[in-house]
Image (cartoon, rainbow, N blue to C red; front, side, top):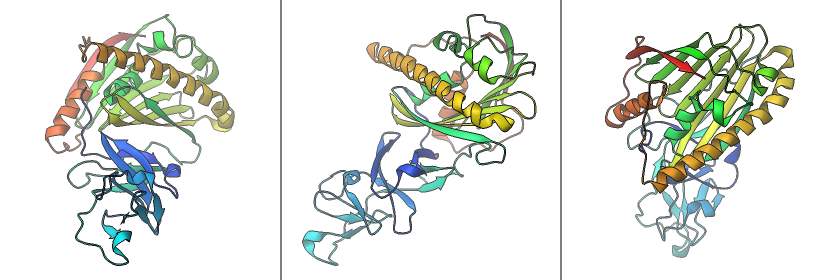
Length: 342
């Protein structure tokens, strides 16, 4: 299964996860140890001691360095060996550093850059996070599926009729006009004249009598964003950053931000458990899909016009894998209309 390009920032952990002890994370198949240096800054090293290849994440942090649990070798935030206890104080031979990966703390997450070159740009900024009038909650979910499968699922409307029946949509499908536009770094789909289907989500959270503006977006390298807007003061934004662990496993970090006036705290009390239930349904269906792909030795997909995002995601990934990111341009590369039922 195709993976996103390495030359981008990916969430490795939440800020709260990186505290006093080293932790293990995997980004695009690369095992990392995350810890904080003496100044409290997060750092990421390859999770392998130079000495006998023990996992550094099984050790501890001492004076801002990660200490191997086997023989106590210590490595600083740059991956340099600063102590070999068996040789005595101050005696460190010319030991090659453990590879260090660029890291940055941003929007409540520790981001790592797994690419070979220098970091490109800054990490993605989650929309409306921390802004006045907006309420936010977060989810971190492990999927037994590829990043591509997760992204296509999050941005796919027709599956909601079947996988989330009654919760999100029903089989009372209607034709909706979708405008699909692909840019150099993203894909946007705007749905016109969508009428919310009868469902738990509609009954609890969609204001009656207000027109719905629904837009779905994909951003490089592996980010989905879904917007539901009901006028100027009612707006839901669901943004998910997908960090591939392997070809068949993905960590998804979701930020749900909404503006709902004075009743926002009450909306959250109801919305969060509903959102978590819907995510569990997606986890289950994608695990079954992954098992089937492995059973048959890979994907043999047949796509139709209403599979709005998959082909465009793969196209942007293929380009990003062989070339530097294209500069953002105001005009789309692709602009077409599709009729879709959901």
